[in-house]
Amino acid sequence: MQHQCRCSVDEKARFVEEARQPGMGVFFVARQAENSPSQLFARKRRMLEGRHAAVQVDEDVIGTFSVRDLQKRFRDLERLLGCKTIENEILKEALDVARPQTSVPAGGGSRFRRSSHAARGSIS
Image 1 (cartoon, rainbow, N blue to C red):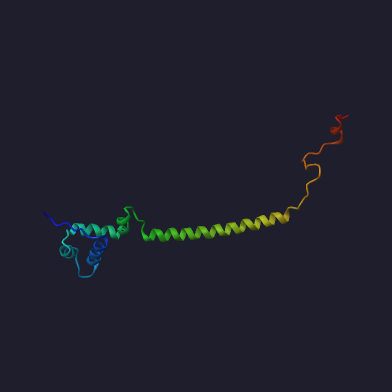
Image 2 (image 1 turned 30 degrees about the vertical axis):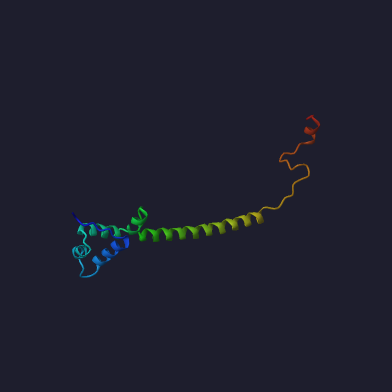
């Protein structure tokens, strides 16, 4: 019967880090940890892909390069939104200045005025 390594995630990460040290090989570290080299190779590959944290929460993890790229894009979009908001406010103020303030007539402010003939009912 083969010995199974029931190590914590931190211990597995430590084994991978040991294997990455100069002069330390995967086979040597695997023998010391009483593990198979294929398991250590698989852990090393997963950690290099950024899935070390995903093992704990059981989901995929986006690489740090992608996160930085998305954060930069988010900041750029926020900056652009701020510029457009300011531009919108300036245009609103310009419209208020350009459009004269008219008061509403007492008769209700209808766009169409009745002529005196139409009000009496006779056009002739």
